[in-house]
Length: 278
Ligand SMILES: [Fe+2]
Image (cartoon, rainbow, N blue to C red; front, side, top):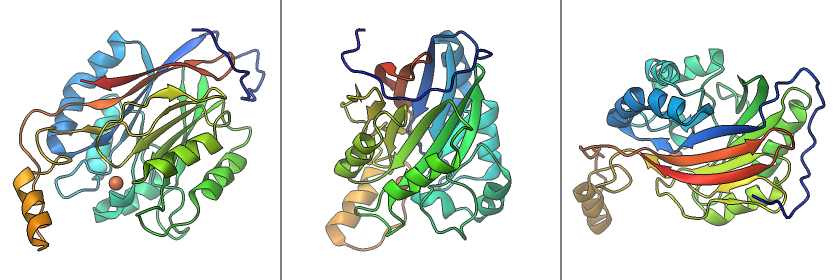
């Protein structure tokens, strides 16, 4: 693929870095429920090896039936091929995750929650000899009034200056305009940016003008025959009656949705992005 733009990424020159030129990085959308966790457990290593994927990031904030993620589920996902688990507004649903967030480097929560909240909004993962700063931020349009996502990301980049080779960001947000605004704001500064939270995969995967890879929403890892992973009768009833209802996940065979990016490690530019539905 010919690049018709000049990359603006500032790479650290280090002669000891390995010579891999193209790296594949897989992002998986919101993991919804135990069936999706089982599907990932069974199939991810195989898919990862077959496609020579160097790094896997997945959003795990809905991994349990009642939302949130338990420490044992996070550890299982890591054992089965997920390198970093990002999250979002549902991360606080399981109280056991709160203590766990303090001591883990593989599960992160959005950067822009108040500083008193447990955990961190970023982590550094290593793959093929490179250091990846993985960040997670939450949108504020139609969502909780958290700190400014733009300033929170700027601060995380500043704090970690010199500690990473490439940067990745999960934008957990409701509004497509907000996700796009964050992506264009950090184009050329963050190598790959993906949206999560809506559970519906968007068909706008692209390479932004300054070389960052992007998709507005990865979609979900869960059962498609329902409403965002939940039984459709419950949601229809709730919307028609306006009465509160307890959610129950839809049974069935889950699909894994995400996007596969190819990163040119010599210049930091993403050279290919493809939607994935497994
Ligand atoms: Fe969410």
